[in-house]
Image (cartoon, rainbow over all chains, first blue to last red; front, side, top):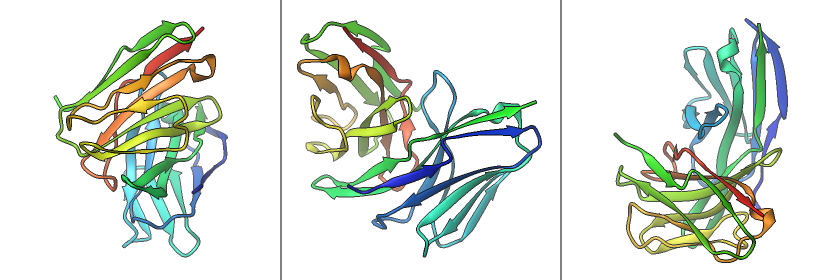
Length: 115
Length: 112
């Protein structure tokens, strides 16, 4: 079974600090690596994604760094704000079945930004 | 409005009573999937579908069935629910796998 390993499981950061979440994957079936953000009571929503023709992508305070050789990518949240408090999931290719490739999510990181 | 809808949003049932959770998307997406979310376990894929009549098992398919007879609908069927299927369920769709997954609002299921 293909694995997607996300760390840390939880993270507490002070307002204005940097939050870093890491993800390691095994399968290289496709080149699309997203991070999803989930607030309590809501479904996950895409935050930022990267296609590894580049090693880094930045959108506002959020940056993905990608290391293809290590099969790892990370999410950096600069100037973390209380409104960033949420659960974050990475996703990567899973196994290949008769219906194509599955998409596997990490176990999630609960981020709390204290004011 | 482009969206993924799930019904019901909340459901309390008893062991063994068959139930169906509906999922519908209005974006003409080919890829649809079901996930269950449990504390500490993240989002685990139950089933996925690449198109009409093409479905496959995810990581935790035991006790579940799906069908994809129309492109827009992807119902999740629990033939004989058990308490270990108590969970929060999400349906998602995307144009294809390597694009944004759009999640529904979730269905919270309690099996007594």
